[in-house]
Image 1: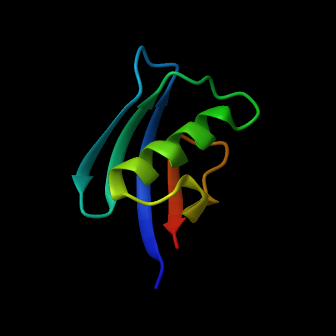
Image 2: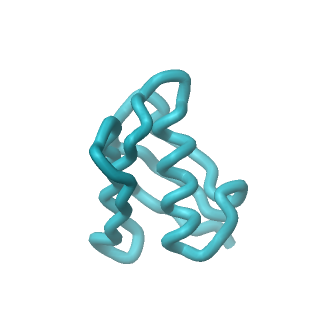
Length: 74
């Protein structure tokens, strides 16, 4: 059964960091700039690390051009 994760993203940060603020919510800082989806890919990787799943199992479902994103973990 998929798990839904809401993430607030801060691209262009000085370091990569991921904080879980609720069971289904994360605050994520990434060094990657929001160009060509690089920041979103970095966020998926950090969420995967936090949940101990491969980044390939973390899929963006909503918010490609927004700082607030919805991911599905399968």
